[in-house]
Image (cartoon, rainbow, N blue to C red):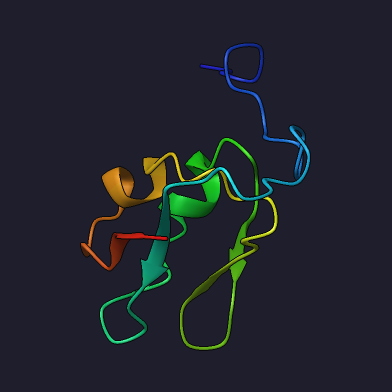
Length: 82
């Protein structure tokens, strides 16, 4: 089954820079992160990438929506107050 018409890939920083209005930001625990890629796939802004020890988040464009935390299988992402 081809899901390409249904699924779309996020365009990196499609909504522009976040600025100072974000209330929470995701914090990744490198000890818990297995680099499964779920957060990368589901990030609506496309600002998560694979890093050396864990995933990396470009906070300039992260909106703090928490989708990454919800899809993290290892519970390696915590939303922290800015």
